[in-house]
Amino acid sequence: MDRTSRSDGTARWRRTGAEPGPVPEPEPTAVEPEPDPDPDRGAPSPPEPDPAPSAPTGNADTQAVPPVELVLEGPGIDPTGASVSTAAVLAWFAAVPAGSTVVVRGGDVIAVDATIRIDRRLHLRGRGELRFVGGVEAAPALKLIVSGSSVTGLRVSYAGPTASSTGERNTGISIWANDVLIDGVTVDGFQNGIAVQPSGEFEGVVISGCHVLNIVGSGGGRGSASSAGEDRGDGITVWGARSAVVGNIVSAAPGTDARVGIHAENLPDYAVDPGSWADSMVTIEGNVVTGPFRRSIAVEGMAHTVVTGNTVSDATWWGLAVIDTRSVALVANTVRWTRTADDDQGSAWGPKRCPAMIYRDAQGTVVSGNVIEIRGVAAAGIMAQAATPPGGSTTVIGAVDALITDNVVRIGGGTCPIGIALDRTGQPVVSGNRVAVTLASGSVGGVVSYLAQDAVVSDNSITGAATSNGFGVLHQGAGSIVVMGNRIDRVRVAVAVNNCTGGATIIGNTGRECEYGLDTFGTTGPSVVQGNRWESDNTAHANAQPNTSYLSTRHMGLARPYGGQSGDILVGNGRLWVNDQGTWRSATLG
Image (cartoon, rainbow, N blue to C red):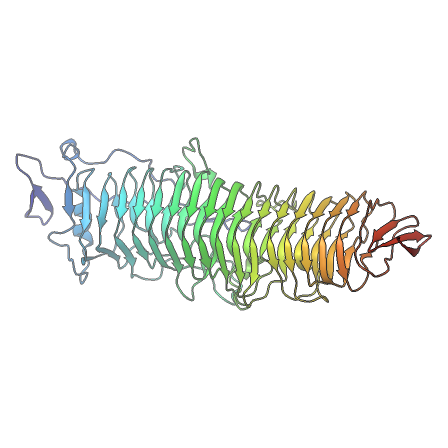
């Protein structure tokens, strides 16, 4: 096959045998409305639905041409990028047969200033560059609308005017189809890098091995009270289902205020055909995310999604986040937390800034095997935060059935006063974690539970910063709790269960270098305290309460207990303590 030119400047191809020439088509356009984010969620308002994936356009003879491999070249197409080649490039793509492979040769730089709309199934590949120098500051650069297309190896860059902070997003590759592959592509300098759009609940998209670089957010940055920036500024976004985001490098431009590095979110109002796996089944694996994104990786409203083996750094809100999700796992990720006290991006939203966040109505979340290094300033290492839902309701909703296990929260020169925080959660399990915390005043410590219901805190290793500060495990509120088998060092109070009427089970814990072993202030529910070892400088069990069953209690501290009610019995270190009408008396056991 060879190539000739028509007198009108458009390209045609010549093969052996007779064939019709491709017929250029007018460039279709789609105007997409301005986003209208929900301030409670910060969720984007995506574009109006694009037409559903359809058969390629063009005359029947053109579509019948067998698939071929074609180089993007010809009259009017400047391979040096010195001149803009938009008209010729759009006409060239309009003439390409469906099923063809389009090659952008290595070393070629082709400058354009309008959206390239891929309206037939094509494989676009090569080591060359499509450089968008304008015309897409409020539009996508590449727009794929037919299922089965792919883009591999290309560089897609933006060197035009500043992207718009309203209206449609400036996006490198916009996907409006199923079963699309984006592999080994470099997308550089856009407001949004690669996005699977929501309007069809598109499925089967794989985004792998890509470099999505220098994402430019629209937030106000440090010191700004603006609420802007929560409807755009993502590296890779999946507003679909049954997709994979694997092995990509994603970065935000230095000094910018971008939103999310990798973002999977449900937007059911825009799903024309939800299908069998609506808002679910997304894998985010083996990616590296750096730069000032507010959230490095976030999963919002999705179900049956896994985030695993990723490395993230430099987030200003949350490194890893699940928001209103169902059955989502954050497993074996590494978070390098570098946020400084000056990093207050998006302060109008009042985020509690931490490496890992379980937000609001997240149900059945697993956070396991992650390594978090605190090099900056964090409110907590891992936090489950309750909040009111969108839509004006004043009812506060917290996470349910969270399993937080086998994580490491370590101090690498930064400050973090709380290892794991549970805010109004239901049935949380916190087990097997290795947690270190730094000095701070107030209700701080290794595991801090506020109004949690039916919590289990077990087998954690917790190290504080000083015996004059904080708690190993602190539970406040009526809900029942089990505190079992924890090892706690260098805090003021090893275990504190305060104002608990649902019952506390406190068994087999060890507190070393603590001022107090156990504090049960206001805890009046039926409780079991047994087999604990407190190496405390002061009282082993403070504020023992009346009407509480402390069964077979072993307090290994040497100090005299106080509090409680007449008849309470404590045994430990070879001594028997009896509360005799408010006075604790002891006898040596022979």
